[in-house]
Structures are given as structure tokens and as C-alpha cells.
Image (cartoon, rainbow, N blue to C red; front, side, top):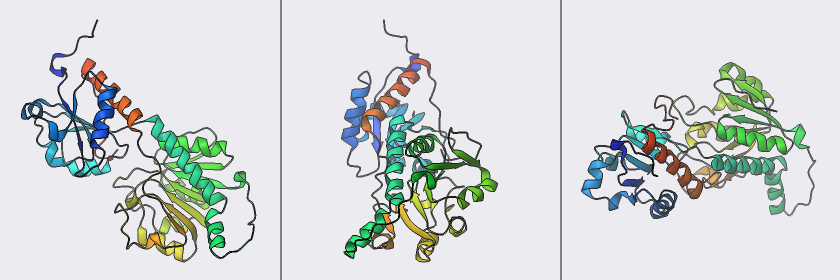
Length: 323
């Protein structure tokens, strides 16, 4: 027997809205429809006027805000991205509730990337690449993983998963968050007062912070100067968290030995930007933790089913905090 649905939550057409020109709209529609066959998932452009007038929930990937305004009954949106800072900024002051994607698979994928690129730096791969270009045969001194301290800025779901993978590889791991956290095997720091202590012992700094008003530009000259001479930096968060001018100056002075950058203020990274040709920077095309459409669609589907049954929403984004 089918469960009784709350009358005002009887299924209506659910649109998928993405940024203009987004190439994977139909792939998302198909994945979402497969995950919730009881619903009717359509691209926004395929909605009828009647469907727009009655729509209460939408699934989004950084949509055009003007399109959301064409849904007068819309109550909440479910993002298929973990990061929602652009969506929050685009919507401005709104009563619309936002649910972001929380997918364990995303955390596992990010943990894999953190480990991979930490090992890249730990085993001196950038230096070996430069030696190859010079046809130079010279083994470099080996340093055991236990002698290398990797510090994570951000100990949310992504940070905790990354910490576990680093610990399994034998690294000494530290982690910082704004509020106190406890992660087994990790030396945890919190608040502004404890950050310098962590930075002072860090060999490889990994940024996994969300972009908020508090974190914008937080990786600046002052913070970089607190790292030991020759430390490395990985940014898998958002480009705007880093003061780009300060990072370049720290690289030019050789205080920071190498930076692995997966995110930038403007993406794709313009061909004219300095990062492309800089010998101590590795440029990645925002590929560290792509969303898995299948697992993400299953999570969105389960959240919408619960909404249909109870009228309750999953945890929503704190607009003031930005996540």
C-alpha cells in the first residue's frame, strides 16, 4: 500500500535548472529521473506554464536567478553541488530555502585527490619534472611520510575524509576549524588564536574551506609567512579564498616551494594568467572532486521522497554563513 502523501505535497513537475550554456543538463535530467521514477523531472526550458505556476521544489546547478523568479510557488531548491556560495550570492535576500548536496562519495573522491596531490609534493615530483626537462639524473633525498606534516584548513565532511586517507598513508596530520573538532589521530586546532601554532609546523597546507565572507582572501601574505620556509600549498576549495598577488609573491621569494591550484577566481583559467607558465605552480581544471551524478541523484531523490511524506526539508543552508 502506498503511503499517504500530505495533500499540498502531491508530486508536481520538478525542473532542473542550470547555468546558461551548461552542457550536462539532459544527463542530469536522465540521472535524476532514473533515481526517482515516481516524479516527473524536466529541464526548465521544457516546463509548461501550468507546471511553472505550481512548482514548489526545483533541482539546481547554479541556475539563472531570473528563471527561478518564473516559479511563483517555489519554496526550496536542492543544489547538486556541495558548494553553494554562487547560488547564495545570486539569490541575494530571499526566503527561498536552499539545500546543498552532502554526498559521502564526494568526500571519498576529495580524499583521494588530497592524498594523490600530497604524494605528488611529498615525493618531489615537480622537482623531478624540472630535472627531466634539464636531462638531469639526480635522485633526491627521501623523506618518510611520518616526518611530513600535512595540515588541513577545514574539518568538515571533506576534511575528515581527507585526514583519514592521509593518516592511512603514514603522514602526520593536523586540522583546523573555526569551532572545536575532534578527529581520531589528528592534532586539531580551532579559532584564530590557534591557527599560527598549526601553520608553524606545516609542511604541506591543504585548503578545503567553504567560501564565505570570513574566508574570502584568508590565504594571504600574513598566513603564508607563518608557514615554514619551503612549505607547499594545495587549494581544493575556491579561488577567492586565496589572495593571488600574495601567493605569487610568496612563490617568487621561494618561501612557498610549490602550489597545486585546482580552483581560480575565473574559470576556465584565462590563457593570459601567470599560473600557466609559472614553474612552481601546478594548474588543475577544477577536477579534484567532481560530483558523481548517480550517487548525487540518489541523495536528491531520497530527500525529495522524505519531503513528500512529511513536508519536512533536509538541513538547509545558513544564508548568513554561506553554507
